[in-house]
Amino acid sequence: MKRVLSTFMTMVILITLTACGTSEKSAVIPQEEYNTLNDKYLLYGTILAYTWSDAEELMPDFFPTYYALYFLHNGGTSSAEWENAMYMPQEDVEAMVQSHFDVSIDFLRSGSDYRPEKEAYEFYGIGSAAYTQVTSAEQNGTLLTIHYDMLNPVDELIAQGSVVIEINGENYKYVSNTTTQDPHNTGV
Image 1 (cartoon, rainbow, N blue to C red):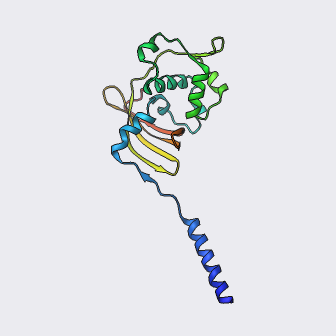
Image 2: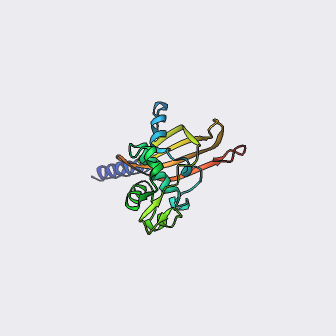
Image 3: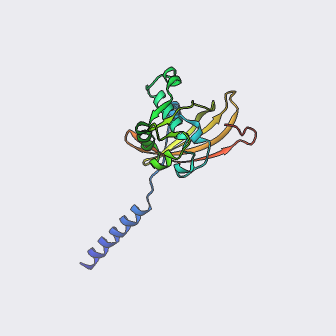
């Protein structure tokens, strides 16, 4: 009986140790999916031009522009209609931005684009002509890491970086970004 109990306990310990030692392996994303990743997650380069581990380290004025680009890119208002639009409703901007970033409403409203008397964010335009290209990507559980190059309009490298995004079904949130500026081209 002692032998059976001893063998059983040894097996339990081995299984426990083996389970503790396993780690989730990253799945490399195939190159054929890079354009899709770029279009879905690297839409607004300004949030990628800075290193951050908390979205509130970015300027609050970046987020209304993120909203406008996201809205345009996903079949919302046409760019011609945005030209005439001066204000974006605070509820729309805040709900969408908070679905993709861990930021508070107070943080968003602290930006110079917020107009409390209109309960809206003022729209000034899109800005930077820099664009991104995915260079590699991997998924580890719910975390998607995308490595990218940021280029200027004449295809010169401005920066390289990695953005981490938490995926939850169809929903996602940006977790962090690390970027390294190219010393030869520092403008975004």
